[in-house]
Length: 163
Image 1 (cartoon, rainbow, N blue to C red):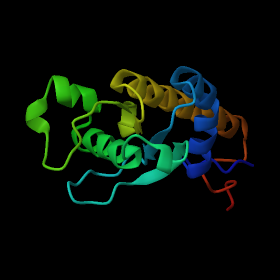
Image 2 (cartoon, rainbow, N blue to C red; image 1 turned 180 degrees about the vertical axis):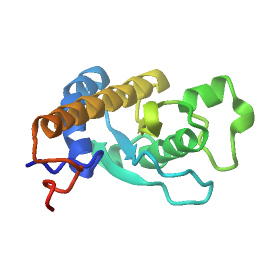
Image 3 (cartoon, helix red, strand yellow; image 1 turned 60 degrees about the vertical axis):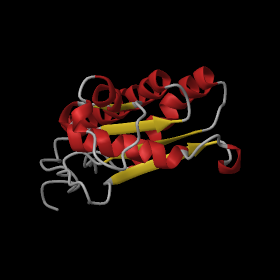
């Protein structure tokens, strides 16, 4: 009996742990902040971000900037436009809205999965974000594989056909 129901905080946390060694290796342990948004939530300019998971590297007092606010702004850009934040900056600057960060460094997976990172050069931030999108995908594939192999599970998150 399986209980998989898509992207959850636990799935995102596991995916970040899979990506963490690469992020820490390339960033040389520098501080940063990462945010994962729940896909499938219709964007609205004033709505609260549908954050499913966030985490930080390093002590906030040691940060060179407000990495959490920048990462969440990058996430808002991607959530609103459906594009990585660097694509808005470099290719579609007419999409910018007041209050958004100027920095690139987010990724948009198929289906609207948004991950954003701040703390490094924009192209490293984008790589870390893309890495976490890929890690979320692999964790979800593994969980879905278990669902597919369980003959008692007909509907996700129900724990079986009679639940």
